[in-house]
Length: 194
Image (cartoon, rainbow, N blue to C red):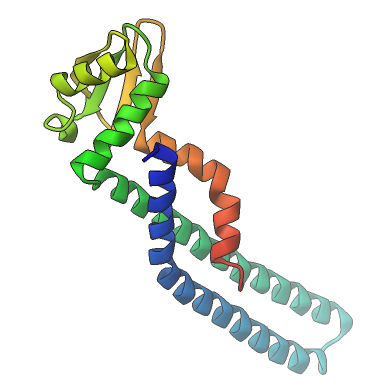
């Protein structure tokens, strides 16, 4: 299964899990906005009936600032839900079964590796991505690559390193790029009701 399809599936699963969080966040955000509007309108109407124009304007400004604060809080909740969605996607990628995990790593190597690259893995993958696995992938790609002795400080994926530059194919980086591309679409799906 290609890397993009697996990542799409994982993000889809994460989005389903996030729907519960989103429903609660939407409920809280809508409730806060409604309560703030009702309270602000009631206070404003009471105050406006007894105050001179300058004071009426000051109260209106305070009401507007209050509504902006509520909107800012709602945006913070939405950002938090998106953060949790992508954190869940990263966790699912890192928790893949060995065979699915190796399919993703193999696809990365076949697409991006060049002669002379060293494959840097994270410490948790040392029993999954062995020298033998890298040799087999190199034969399949018809290039010379090797497993680096140094380990990377990332949670999953690989870094292809050579003397000129590194190719960062860690899951954190891949999801970051994917998030930049998909976040507006995911946000509109998750928060369509608000």
